[in-house]
Image (tube, rainbow, N blue to C red):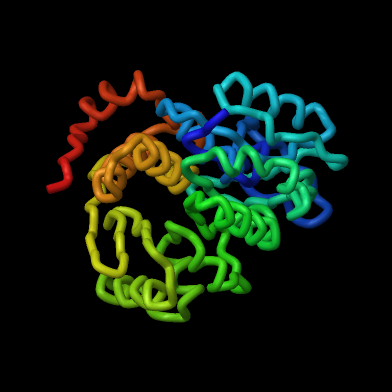
Length: 313
């Protein structure tokens, strides 16, 4: 079996509680609302790509609890191949989030995600080998990411590494083995130790990574768009102006959408335009995966928002 995209990474159950105020240590307070949703960077990216019609496989670890069973069922119902999803010994990864107005506090519990070790990937070489693109993030161990990059490199399969959450210990030699490195400007600044306040500074930092061997650096810069820098190309793809409601998961929707459009045959510039347009729609809707429209829904939503994807010239 062949896949357009294989995502190797995390899944998290988001446990969100609205609070009027945070409790003090030792205090119990009543909260007005609670909701649970499917999240985690790896799963978000896989879900976005699948929503758009890509043939997606996921390599991940779900928990040996009810949340793990629910997530596995969710993957299957979303059309994601679960041949690489196994059940760990720990409970499922969770992300309790406490929301107070526009501010939130989040706790990440890796759970079974911590059991996705480098050795685990040896069981899934066939999935990696038969993929058009491997997509990675950093909610699993760097050692597992490194092994994924190495195995993909053996088979000549390109890798897209989204370095979120940021980790200052990242090995540049492994980054240079990737076809795409896609940080936001903050993550770019942390890796390069360079200023990233202006577009020119961001370009300079991205070019530093290209000089170190990274083939394509794609920097997401929020409302300013996305910057693509390679050895012989530099392009700022503008964002689409919409009224944002919720930006949670927008970066993951961008990665998932770009992966889909790129593996479906679009050139990088056009795929980035489509990814920007998809992410723009998601920020006008609440939640992470709940904000990701399907391919069937997308045209009407984009038309309503006045989003027209201009072709690459």
